[in-house]
Structures are given as structure tokens and as C-alpha cells.
Length: 128
Image 1 (cartoon, rainbow, N blue to C red):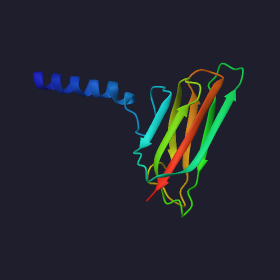
Image 2 (cartoon, rainbow, N blue to C red):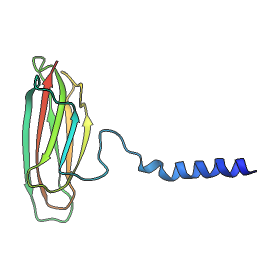
Image 3 (cartoon, rainbow, N blue to C red):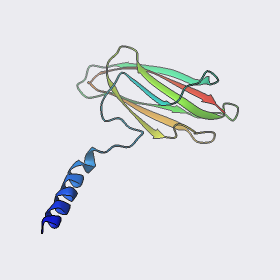
């Protein structure tokens, strides 16, 4: 009987915390900088862009960065997303990511943690 309650308690705890698990490509907690992959000096910048969205609203601002590497750029090896004004934001890699090459795109979704202000820069480094 004790084994049943122990098993039932373990299952209850697992089911309780299951929604708290997250995919590797998304963020549960906001931050001011996110990095994916590993940087080496042999990598070259193959994509660089920034967004500065300032609107008067109370809902979060969401933007998508899309990058398609050419055959010469090889594969995506390192991604860094930073806040230029140190305000926290969320990131999710919706498609592609590290190891992605042509013809697949890398789509990065950024969302402000607080409504109205989103000022982030995205740099993607490519290499062999």
C-alpha cells in the first residue's frame, strides 16, 4: 500500500511540474542577452540586424527576424541576441537555429517583457 502512495505521489509531482518544462529554443525568463551555439574566431558574421520598436501600449511588442544562409555562408554556428537599452525581453527560435544551412531559414521571435519597448540586435555567425 505504501508503494502505491509513493508511486502516486511521484506521478502527481511529475504532472504538476510538467508544464514548467521548456524547449531548448525558448526562454521562460526574460533576459538582456541570449546566446546559442559556441563562438570561435574562425566564424564570420553572416547576418546582423536590429529593431527599435517604441509604441505607447501596455501589451508586449513582438518581432520576427528571418535569415536564409547562402551556400557560401555554410552553416549557422553562433547566434547572439542582445538588448541595446538593457531592457529585458524573451527569445524563441521558431525555425532553424544552430547547424541550419541553405535552404532552411532561421526564424527568431523576440518579445518585449514589458509593453511598448523593444530594442534588440541580432547577430548570426556562420562557418564550416
